[in-house]
Amino acid sequence: MTDALLRDDEAELQRQVRAFVEREVIPHASRWDQEERYPRELFEKLGALGWLGTAFPESVGGSGGGSVLYAILCSELARGSAGAALGIYVHTALACSALLHLGDKSHHEVLSAALRGTAVGCWAYAEPGAGADVSSVSTRARRDGDEYVVDGSKLYITNAPFADFMVVVASTAPDQGLKGMSLFLVERTREGVSTGKPMKKLGMGASEMSEIVFDGCRVPVSNRLGEEGSGFLAAMKVLVLGRIAAASFGVGLGRAALENAAAYTRERVQFGAPLVKQQFVRFTLADMATRLEAAWQLTLAAARLVDAGKPFDKEASMAKLFASETATWACERSLHLCGAQGYMSESPAQRFYRDCKVLELGEGTSEIQRETIARYLVK
Ligand SMILES: Cc1cc2nc3c(=O)[nH]c(=O)nc-3n(C[C@H](O)[C@H](O)[C@H](O)COP(=O)(O)OP(=O)(O)OC[C@H]3O[C@@H](n4cnc5c(N)ncnc54)[C@H](O)[C@@H]3O)c2cc1C
Image (cartoon, rainbow, N blue to C red; front, side, top):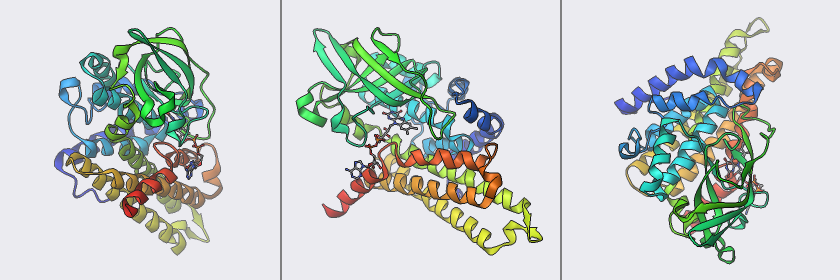
């Protein structure tokens, strides 16, 4: 991967995270996946190293830096374990970013604990009836004096089984669609909050997700993040790390799939020679490397736009779309090149194959990204 143009601090972070991942993530990734349990100690380890605070200002307990550093962090973590990286991404790019950008000083105590890794967050948007269509969120937050009363349920929420706090998208004015959405910080310990059992899923075994039910849960007005009714639209503007992170995930996971296929085909002998001597194999590896390089450069370009304070919406969607679809393709090719060995449950190839698909679904599906890009082309 051409990283020759990374700045010194970017290359240094990449080197450090890669060494950490080789030591503390890759040796355990298969077991975490099979046990379907999140390695919670990662939050404190990454917090102690200051990496959870990447792209967050020092004034709130962050480590500074911007989206490029965050992209490097996500890509390297996903190369080691996409499931483990998923929990970190939801916590930082969504839950912590919402507290930083939409919250005020009263939310900074929770935020700095979250950046140290001593409190874990989740992002609770999706519902049984609300997926790609944000305006159909039906969880209701009704104002009652100095409090809101939250009722409804959320589905597929990563980190929910153990999260200490939740950033919840709820409707405060159901007749106003998107303009009636607000965001709330809800602490797990509040009455009326319950989570279901961890859900069984195809991949991302090292991450845990569940339903969350709010039953007459009362939160103070001060727990609202941002203005009433402006919540979701504001969130879309400020949660800039989301698509960058998802694109970086695709690159990291695709890179792991490429390395795995290259290593296997160098060793595996058929027809009297290592598989890698076959032109088909070499060309497949070359195509994987080329597409992943393109995905990484798109991701870095989008991240650099964010850091330069320039418009980035179209480019972030392009990076997310291309990197996630490239990851799906590269993981499928990696399994194909590993043959039956790749299909066995101890093989990393089958784990990558199961992990990758969700990147096309979360953080805006591929169709939503195409709609976003097309809007800029036809306006
Ligand atoms: C592993 C995993 C982790 C997740 N973690 C979280 C989390 O932490 N927090 C959270 O809030 N959610 C989470 N989700 C849920 C995620 O937000 C949703 O999957 C996403 O919003 C898409 O919704 P949906 O899956 O219900 O798809 P649907 O909206 O039902 O869409 C199904 C398909 O139809 C397509 N489609 C829908 N509308 C259109 C249209 N207008 N034009 C063209 N195509 C369309 C979609 O692109 C998709 O391919 C997670 C999901 C998974 C699988």
